[in-house]
Image (cartoon, rainbow, N blue to C red):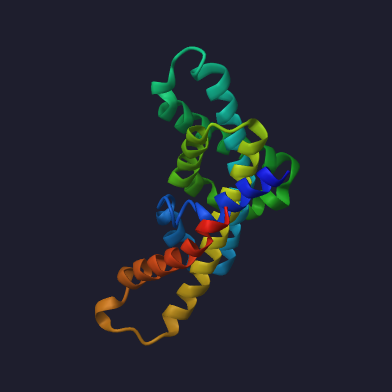
Length: 191
């Protein structure tokens, strides 16, 4: 149980998808205008990433590795992640319409989100078990959500601040993301 907790903490804080691997930064910039959209994308990632982590691990273990098809991982995983996102959307629409209502807006963002495929590939490279893949997915999604919400709050503060003209716009956002990344580097020794 301690090992699973460490996998969760490492994926969430120490090896964050956005800050450590620079995956999903476009999604972070796109949804960080309002806190509601940031929380909505975080919930959508928390629903989808653990499922995709487990499914892709199982596909890699049962199909790609035994038949020596590792060179097709990226193609398989992009297709599989897209199918899982669409399948989860259909399931949520049928069984949990309230949650679907909150997350349906983010389905197009999730279909092109590099953090989903990147997290799946990182998970396969670490060669963990099925349950560990689940905790890695939950931790990665939680870390992604944490960064999105923190960045949105910082962006709200930046908008009302007096910033020199040379730093306004995308440059201050990138500087803020870099400083946030340095702050998260403090968690590296934790896991």
